[in-house]
Length: 525
Ligand code: DHB
Image 1 (cartoon, rainbow, N blue to C red):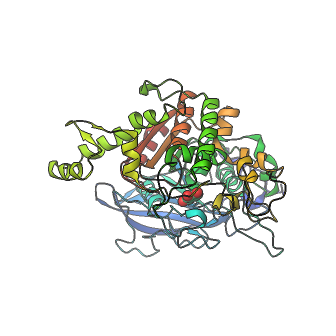
Image 2: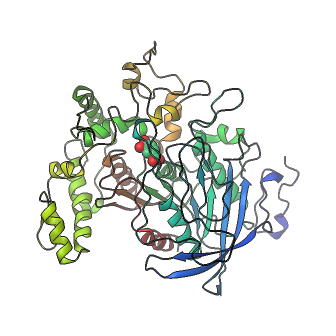
Image 3: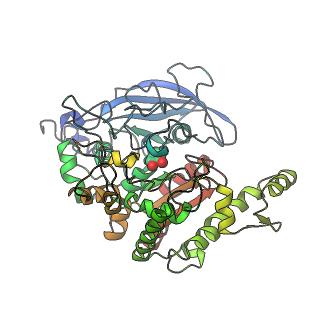
């Protein structure tokens, strides 16, 4: 490479790319139109320029996944818009830690899941035609889970994130949609090439591509806002936490990532399935006594073991509750009260306050665990747990003794499909693992995949300083403490955090997408 280095440097406003193949071609777009229905129900006619399937690394392992799409609005409701300095929404469509591709999309929001990940294709993808109603973003769009995988993993992407992209476009923002490798991808030698840390390395490479093309790709490369749901939410938080961390250098070099910063400005994350090596304990602390949908309790001895591991971990984190919570150090003993007061009751309160009197009465009659004093909802943690009902996952939820969880696959190696990634999981292995220990590369992989590593063990000065985190109160794909701890840590460090739980919503919900778009304007302005 290097021949075309700084090929456009004479213009003064573009930065050099490390390889000629990584120079964005501003002219290579198609002009498309779509109709976006905003959260008030108003339709907007949007004309945009669409760049399709641009490979963002110079040495792709699989360009089907290591490619991105760019959408730039040029006219909204008949008025020309200039997005050259607009925020950039970097919307991934990762689900279930599986591969995601934008290569076949015919317009914004058309990503699909690869690797047998199920349908995952968002509805309402726009077309190249200028017809009305080709896509819409409904006010309360929420992606429902589809395609169950091992241990109940499901893909949550689709509608929810598609909504973000469309609303961002109609707000005048640039939308970049990166694909990324994911678990399960196998080459002709029978080697897996999509397991950890491929997904985060790819997303970082996508950010580097965008930044290295400053002045060529429209938009403000210093105002990149990442968005993703579930596993995609996890990698969104990781992208924000790990900006410019040196621990990814060799991986980025290997795939020929552009030579530029991969720090991003802000994070949007819906139900992030993250902090994986602590998620089993957190899960049992939260949902340990809830029965499965079969009515069966999980092994309470295992559940208790894991719960005590969580107590240790939580103590070690030394987190304080959010500023306005009145809570000091968060522990396994007070975290339930913290979640209740800081998140669950306010969430129910918001929900009930928005109902008509008669709808509220109906709801209260059906949900007697909840007390409404005319202004506020109150209830007990046990009442809340009973209200949520069945837990989705068996025990351990993430590092399954029989290696059946999606996360076992995510931490697989080139030659081993599924591996343990916790000492406890390995010790209790039921698949014949003779060492009963995790393999030696696992600790490093865990750091590469965990935002908490970059916020707690390291305090990354290049992290995002703005965090939008959302989660349904009924979501039992992971523990409620995972998001709450992430939020607490970011705020303890001085970052701006906007975190709430959607009442009675499940996995993948995004019921306030308009507020996210407004938040982007606020934090980037
Ligand atoms: C997703 C869901 C899970 O339950 C999980 O463990 C990992 C990922 C997802 O929907 O992306």
